Image (cartoon, rainbow, N blue to C red; front, side, top):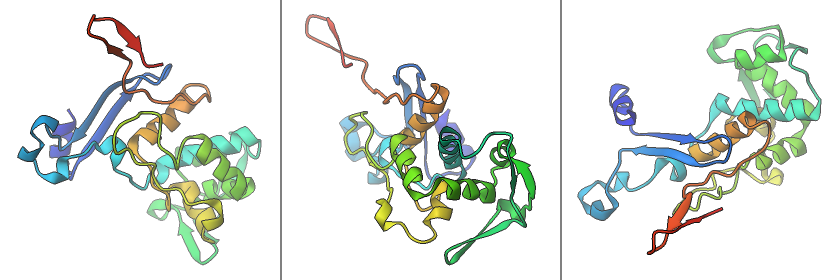
Length: 219
Protein backbone atom coordinates (compact mmCIF):
# COMPACT_ATOMS: atom_id res chain seq x y z
CA UNK A 1 0.00 0.00 0.00
CA UNK A 2 2.84 2.37 0.82
CA UNK A 3 4.61 1.60 -2.46
CA UNK A 4 1.37 2.25 -4.33
CA UNK A 5 0.92 5.64 -2.65
CA UNK A 6 4.53 6.65 -3.31
CA UNK A 7 4.06 5.75 -6.96
CA UNK A 8 0.72 7.53 -7.25
CA UNK A 9 2.09 10.82 -5.94
CA UNK A 10 5.54 10.47 -7.53
CA UNK A 11 7.16 10.83 -4.12
CA UNK A 12 10.87 10.33 -3.45
CA UNK A 13 9.97 7.94 -0.65
CA UNK A 14 7.55 7.25 2.15
CA UNK A 15 7.11 5.71 5.57
CA UNK A 16 4.24 4.17 7.53
CA UNK A 17 3.98 2.83 11.07
CA UNK A 18 1.14 1.23 13.03
CA UNK A 19 1.45 1.18 16.82
CA UNK A 20 -0.77 -0.27 19.53
CA UNK A 21 -1.76 2.80 21.55
CA UNK A 22 -2.06 0.80 24.77
CA UNK A 23 1.42 -0.69 25.04
CA UNK A 24 3.57 0.81 22.28
CA UNK A 25 3.94 -2.40 20.27
CA UNK A 26 4.90 -1.65 16.67
CA UNK A 27 2.43 -3.76 14.72
CA UNK A 28 3.67 -2.79 11.26
CA UNK A 29 6.45 -0.65 9.84
CA UNK A 30 7.20 0.02 6.19
CA UNK A 31 9.75 2.16 4.38
CA UNK A 32 9.82 2.89 0.66
CA UNK A 33 11.96 2.45 -1.35
CA UNK A 34 12.89 -0.75 0.42
CA UNK A 35 15.77 -3.21 0.20
CA UNK A 36 16.79 -6.70 1.26
CA UNK A 37 19.52 -6.47 3.96
CA UNK A 38 20.78 -9.89 2.86
CA UNK A 39 21.37 -8.55 -0.66
CA UNK A 40 21.85 -4.85 -0.03
CA UNK A 41 24.42 -4.53 -2.82
CA UNK A 42 21.63 -5.26 -5.30
CA UNK A 43 19.87 -2.03 -4.28
CA UNK A 44 20.90 1.63 -4.59
CA UNK A 45 22.54 3.10 -1.45
CA UNK A 46 19.70 5.64 -1.14
CA UNK A 47 17.38 2.80 -0.14
CA UNK A 48 19.64 1.35 2.58
CA UNK A 49 17.72 2.81 5.49
CA UNK A 50 14.46 2.77 7.40
CA UNK A 51 12.92 6.19 6.85
CA UNK A 52 10.67 5.80 9.90
CA UNK A 53 13.55 6.02 12.35
CA UNK A 54 16.53 7.35 10.39
CA UNK A 55 15.11 10.19 8.29
CA UNK A 56 14.28 13.51 9.95
CA UNK A 57 11.91 16.13 8.64
CA UNK A 58 10.32 19.42 9.65
CA UNK A 59 6.88 18.43 11.00
CA UNK A 60 5.08 21.72 10.32
CA UNK A 61 1.48 22.01 11.45
CA UNK A 62 1.28 18.44 12.76
CA UNK A 63 3.47 19.76 15.60
CA UNK A 64 0.82 22.25 16.78
CA UNK A 65 -0.95 19.56 18.78
CA UNK A 66 2.07 19.46 21.12
CA UNK A 67 1.89 23.21 21.75
CA UNK A 68 -1.85 22.89 22.30
CA UNK A 69 -1.48 20.02 24.76
CA UNK A 70 1.10 21.97 26.76
CA UNK A 71 -1.12 25.05 26.87
CA UNK A 72 -4.17 23.14 28.08
CA UNK A 73 -2.13 21.17 30.63
CA UNK A 74 -0.65 24.40 32.03
CA UNK A 75 -4.03 26.12 32.12
CA UNK A 76 -3.05 29.08 29.95
CA UNK A 77 -6.01 28.47 27.65
CA UNK A 78 -9.28 26.54 27.50
CA UNK A 79 -10.73 24.96 24.34
CA UNK A 80 -13.59 27.49 24.26
CA UNK A 81 -11.48 30.57 24.99
CA UNK A 82 -11.71 33.28 22.33
CA UNK A 83 -8.45 34.42 20.74
CA UNK A 84 -7.92 37.38 18.43
CA UNK A 85 -5.82 36.10 15.55
CA UNK A 86 -5.73 39.61 14.11
CA UNK A 87 -5.05 40.39 10.49
CA UNK A 88 -3.30 37.16 9.59
CA UNK A 89 0.27 38.12 10.52
CA UNK A 90 2.42 38.33 13.64
CA UNK A 91 5.91 39.73 14.14
CA UNK A 92 8.34 37.57 16.11
CA UNK A 93 11.78 39.18 16.43
CA UNK A 94 12.94 39.81 12.85
CA UNK A 95 10.44 37.44 11.21
CA UNK A 96 6.85 38.12 10.17
CA UNK A 97 4.78 34.94 10.21
CA UNK A 98 1.54 34.67 8.25
CA UNK A 99 -1.42 32.31 8.23
CA UNK A 100 -1.24 29.60 5.60
CA UNK A 101 -3.06 30.35 2.37
CA UNK A 102 -3.29 34.05 3.17
CA UNK A 103 -6.13 33.47 5.65
CA UNK A 104 -7.31 36.14 8.11
CA UNK A 105 -9.19 34.44 10.94
CA UNK A 106 -9.82 37.24 13.45
CA UNK A 107 -11.73 36.12 16.55
CA UNK A 108 -11.97 32.36 17.07
CA UNK A 109 -11.99 29.79 19.86
CA UNK A 110 -8.84 27.88 20.67
CA UNK A 111 -10.60 24.76 19.46
CA UNK A 112 -11.03 26.45 16.07
CA UNK A 113 -7.38 27.53 16.14
CA UNK A 114 -6.58 23.83 15.94
CA UNK A 115 -9.35 23.00 13.49
CA UNK A 116 -8.14 25.67 11.06
CA UNK A 117 -4.46 25.18 11.95
CA UNK A 118 -3.94 28.86 12.71
CA UNK A 119 -0.29 29.83 12.94
CA UNK A 120 -1.13 33.10 14.71
CA UNK A 121 -3.35 31.52 17.35
CA UNK A 122 -0.81 28.81 18.09
CA UNK A 123 2.02 31.32 18.44
CA UNK A 124 -0.06 33.52 20.74
CA UNK A 125 -0.60 30.57 23.07
CA UNK A 126 3.09 29.66 22.88
CA UNK A 127 3.96 33.18 24.03
CA UNK A 128 1.74 32.68 27.08
CA UNK A 129 3.62 29.47 27.85
CA UNK A 130 7.10 30.94 27.43
CA UNK A 131 10.30 29.28 26.24
CA UNK A 132 11.02 27.19 29.34
CA UNK A 133 7.64 25.48 29.43
CA UNK A 134 7.58 24.89 25.67
CA UNK A 135 11.03 23.29 25.83
CA UNK A 136 9.96 21.15 28.79
CA UNK A 137 6.92 19.76 27.00
CA UNK A 138 8.73 19.14 23.73
CA UNK A 139 11.23 16.98 25.59
CA UNK A 140 8.52 15.34 27.71
CA UNK A 141 6.88 14.25 24.45
CA UNK A 142 10.19 12.64 23.46
CA UNK A 143 11.55 15.08 20.91
CA UNK A 144 15.28 15.70 20.71
CA UNK A 145 16.27 12.19 21.79
CA UNK A 146 16.06 8.66 20.49
CA UNK A 147 13.13 6.47 21.45
CA UNK A 148 13.62 3.14 23.20
CA UNK A 149 13.05 1.33 19.91
CA UNK A 150 16.65 0.14 19.71
CA UNK A 151 16.76 0.31 15.92
CA UNK A 152 20.32 0.66 14.53
CA UNK A 153 21.04 4.13 13.22
CA UNK A 154 17.98 5.73 14.81
CA UNK A 155 18.09 9.53 14.74
CA UNK A 156 17.38 11.73 17.75
CA UNK A 157 15.94 14.41 15.51
CA UNK A 158 16.92 18.04 15.93
CA UNK A 159 15.79 20.21 18.82
CA UNK A 160 18.05 23.11 19.76
CA UNK A 161 19.00 23.58 23.43
CA UNK A 162 16.93 26.39 24.85
CA UNK A 163 19.98 28.65 25.20
CA UNK A 164 20.59 28.28 21.45
CA UNK A 165 17.11 29.36 20.36
CA UNK A 166 16.92 32.26 17.93
CA UNK A 167 14.79 35.32 18.53
CA UNK A 168 12.26 33.95 16.06
CA UNK A 169 12.19 30.46 17.61
CA UNK A 170 9.20 31.37 19.78
CA UNK A 171 7.28 31.78 16.54
CA UNK A 172 8.68 28.96 14.46
CA UNK A 173 9.11 26.01 16.85
CA UNK A 174 5.52 26.00 18.22
CA UNK A 175 4.23 25.59 14.64
CA UNK A 176 6.72 22.87 13.73
CA UNK A 177 9.41 24.87 11.95
CA UNK A 178 13.06 25.02 13.00
CA UNK A 179 12.76 21.56 14.55
CA UNK A 180 13.24 18.14 12.97
CA UNK A 181 11.65 14.84 14.02
CA UNK A 182 11.47 11.21 12.98
CA UNK A 183 8.21 9.55 12.04
CA UNK A 184 8.38 7.27 15.07
CA UNK A 185 8.88 10.26 17.40
CA UNK A 186 5.82 11.94 15.92
CA UNK A 187 3.81 8.75 16.24
CA UNK A 188 4.77 8.38 19.91
CA UNK A 189 3.77 12.00 20.60
CA UNK A 190 0.33 11.58 19.03
CA UNK A 191 -0.05 8.28 20.82
CA UNK A 192 0.55 10.08 24.13
CA UNK A 193 -2.58 12.14 23.45
CA UNK A 194 -4.54 9.08 22.30
CA UNK A 195 -3.40 7.30 25.46
CA UNK A 196 -4.84 9.88 27.83
CA UNK A 197 -1.63 11.86 28.28
CA UNK A 198 0.61 8.93 29.21
CA UNK A 199 3.73 8.48 27.07
CA UNK A 200 4.35 4.88 26.03
CA UNK A 201 7.71 4.12 24.47
CA UNK A 202 7.40 2.32 21.11
CA UNK A 203 8.62 -1.28 21.13
CA UNK A 204 9.79 -3.02 17.98
CA UNK A 205 10.39 -6.51 19.40
CA UNK A 206 7.78 -8.08 21.66
CA UNK A 207 9.82 -11.14 22.59
CA UNK A 208 12.75 -13.29 21.58
CA UNK A 209 12.56 -17.06 21.12
CA UNK A 210 15.34 -19.31 22.38
CA UNK A 211 16.53 -22.57 20.85
CA UNK A 212 13.93 -24.50 22.84
CA UNK A 213 11.14 -22.37 21.42
CA UNK A 214 10.46 -20.52 24.66
CA UNK A 215 9.50 -16.84 24.38
CA UNK A 216 11.31 -14.21 26.45
CA UNK A 217 9.42 -10.87 26.55
CA UNK A 218 11.59 -7.82 25.99
CA UNK A 219 9.67 -5.76 28.55
